[in-house]
Every structure is written in C-alpha cells, then in structure tokens.
Image (tube, rainbow, N blue to C red; front, side):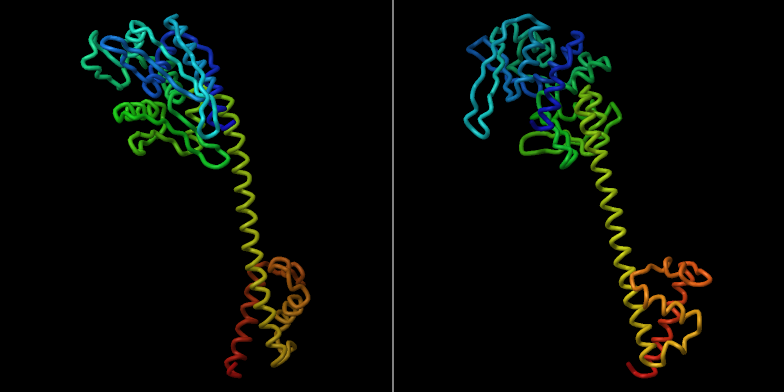
Length: 319
C-alpha cells in the first residue's frame, strides 16, 4: 500500500462528529471529485468515482448520515494498469441531488441558471475552525495525494477550477502554512514540499498515524544524512592528512638526500624522524610524541620550516 493510500484510509475512518463538519467535508469532496450528470430535461444526478474502497465507504457514509437517501454503489474492474477495482457512488434522485448541491452552495439559486456552478468556498461552510479542517480533509480525500516520504516530501491537491484552487490554497495557508499553486496541463495543483509543513497539514486533517510514520522516516533520514556528512567530512580530512604527510615525507627525504637530516635544527630533526617513523599520524598525534609535547599549530609551523629548507635547496640546485 502506498503512503498516500495509507493516509487516505486513516482519514476515511475518522468518526463523523457533527453535521457542520460532515457538510464541509462533503462540500470539498464534491468540488474535487463530484460529477454532475444531466438526465433529460429536468433530471440531474451526482456521481463519484474512486479506486479506494475506504473513500467510497466514506462518501457513502457522509451522504447517508446527512440525507438518509438511497445511494447506489457499483464496483467495476479496471482493465488497465494494475486492474484495481473502480468504485462508482451515485445519487440518482433529482430532488436529493439538488438539495445536496444547494446545501454545499455549489449552486445557490432555486434555478440552475443554465447550470452555472459556483466552485468558490462559501464562508458559511467553513465558518468554524473544525469545519475548515474537515474541508481540507475532504479536499485531500477527493483530489489529494502524498509522495512516499522515503523518497521526497510532496503533498498536493488537484482541482480543475482556478478560483477553487486559489481559495483552497488560502484556506490551507490560514493555518500558518505556505502552499503554492502551479498549473499542470488543464489542472491547478496546490502543493507543499517541506517535511515540516506536510507534518502540520497531516495534523490539521487529523491523520495522526500517517504523521507519526512520516516523523519516524524524517528522523531516520536526518540520522542517515548526518552520518553521511560526518563520514564525508572524515574522509575529506583523512585525504588532506595523507596528502600533507606525503608532501612532508618528500621534503624530508629530499633534505636527507642532499645535505643530510643531521644539518637540521634539533626541533626540526626530531619531528622529521617522527614523521618518517609514523607516516599516517596526524599533526596532533605527532605533537604529543615530541618531548616536550607541541600543539598542532606548532607542529604545522615546524613542517613549514622544513618545507622552506627543502625549497631553498631545490632552488640552489636548480631542481
């Protein structure tokens, strides 16, 4: 099961607490997923399609809880792709359909005005904070998705109405989030891409199990990233230590082959012998071996002196 399906299944099991929130959730689902079908001169029906059985049950439950009407549920086998079941939920009764559409303010007049629909989000539907949360939840159930957080952080809502998209984005952002809109083909996509903001919107929608799962993944990813950074840093430092050690050994061997190491001052001679004996040691480790011990900067200073002597000898001999 995908993380998106896991999240939707959890949201679909949230108890329907009161009618105002049920109305807000249904209003969002209709705007995102509802299909209004004209039947003859006066007939009208409302349809929903989904491949998620939990969402189909949720829509059925909302309609029964609010209107106690006859709702048909049909299951069809999808012959394409993975051959998942396709669930069709239908309200055939014209009077019931009209009442639903008026209640959720998708149509606001007694007449259909050439079936002009208003996809804006009515303030009366989301007047309470709990209803705002329910509307966002319904929008996700009707047209949302979330990527596998193991791979990337991305949550989106897809609508084909620009006005509805802008108002849904504003509603989401009223909770202190920063959703943005992009056009994809003929649709408008409201999206969040930051892990922390996706955690917040899961909390707003009350997807607490999905939230905990995502937080666990975020922690593991942060630990892995920190370990990788430490390993990369250690690898880089080790590479620098080895390069410096090879350069120091080369200078010491050049001095030894030309004038002999015995010509070096005692503090440089002692360090040169230690470097030849401990080729992989760091500057700090070499400093602790000296008597008396010398700090890292002091060891580095002495190696610079050795390098200067080697450079001067090369210039004198033209090598």
